[in-house]
Length: 136
Image (cartoon, rainbow, N blue to C red; front, top):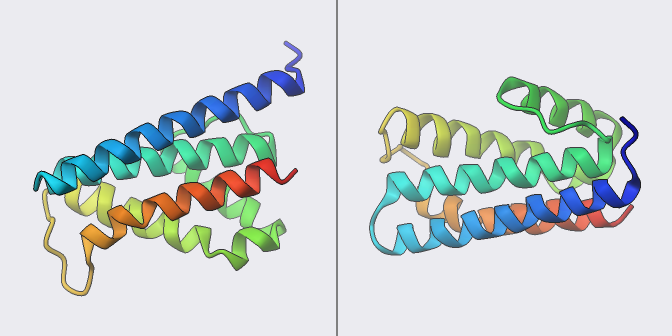
């Protein structure tokens, strides 16, 4: 099936819309003291934003799990702006602490990690991914 550029752009916009909605939910959950739910939503927002970035920049279909991680690493090797913004580090912090530790394992108090700050700063990750996706 041939995928038009307009279809790709529409899918990218939809993914960012989902990411932004999930982020807003994460902030509500955080404010209500539901840290585990906030971590889940912030990770899901990160995943959606990463999927959109991969689709826009690498023309990679949306991938799940380790496929997504592998693809963001590959993209960062060739894209200096992704490295300059530290998106791989930000992605890794979220997959480890928000998804793995807090949501999956229920470990939401982690020495030297401020989960609330990580959740809040997910908005910047989404913004950076969106700017990079729309810059091409």
